[in-house]
Length: 593
Image (tube, rainbow, N blue to C red; front, side, top):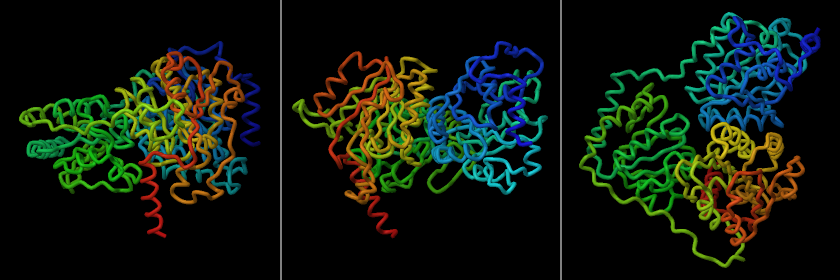
């Protein structure tokens, strides 16, 4: 008998309904709970209260258990790829997330998003409902397999893009394995794969195990190695005449934004961010100097960073788009890279020395060595847009300078790979604004799926917090279905769709008139009602006057309903930095051909 038949018979016996909360929900004080419920109780303890994914026959009993835990919700995505994007953004905001898929067909559909989370240091626990242990042992010819009796092949695929993996095979060790997976996801900020056979979900484990919280604390650094790092750092800082601080993506991912801010406050060193690090430093801070992207930086920022005699680089992820095609050009070898699991000073690497503890120790001592430092001016921020006739057609260079006036403190801003990700670098953020952009992995369509995860996380933190998406009309077509899930949950993001008729970033790199860079134009203003929205706004903006009128509208500035705003832009219109990056990329591709 197949697992599917066994499952259906069991399901009829239980007479369950996965869309309701059980009326006989066992109290957590009972002596035993199911292993399935144990998973969700543990997730709730680490404040992961929304779970993303899709149902499939090998995970259905597991999904029933979500409704046994008060405060948990099942997002119910449109496809697994979108779910993985949503889980990624949720984790960026709340520290980690959970994605549940079914064996084979479901888990493979999610792997592009999981790979992006691995590349960009995002903690996603990927739970896969797999066939029972007995079915695997008998090598049954089950659906969702390759038909060769190999039930480990998909697990092996995921192992290459996971920090660690676990396949539950022993009930006695199952709770500790689940705890280990959650801890690793949270601490290492990388995806973790957890395979849960369908026959284990209803097995009982001691409820008392939940009384001991999962230890999420970092293990201390080796004291001698940390002291050597601190001693060297203090000497370098003492000798520096023109130091700078450069914050990158992992300053946010590995939770050292507070330490970075305090370092800026104490030292008063000029401070900059990379594109991936945007939002990791308050941009209203008087010592904030701008975004450094190598040769793509403004001349003043480029000069300030590259003329420094000491660069303190916090959480670097030095990808091509994050560095202006590797065009960083420091004039000093005095570069210190702070990473989650090592420190690099000049050419010396200190493995296992974590930046969290190094920065905290440094903060206690650095004040004494910078007391004679005389702060140098930071580059002036770009001037606001000059007044133009309200009928002036909307263009990107004007738009991205203007967006900063629309943003509010506390906003979460998502930008899609392409024009949006480059344009946002010239937008001046209010303080405490969180930027999300998949600059390294760069999967087209990421931002719309991610917007769902971001708005669900924001809702759990503060219902008044705004979530704002900027995406291209081409990118939107890859993941537009997830707007349906936003409508389903009555979420209220701002969805700005930049319509310049085609894949502009690809056109700039190669094939400006090629048919493969064209797309079918959609009636974007009809999308929200098509997906069932009742209380919504759908607006088209074509001129600077229309933008300003909208941005100044008090009602529009409150996240009271879901909104889709189509921004009409000229074909081939793009931010200046993207045009330069495309030229660099095209030249690099030509050299490697």
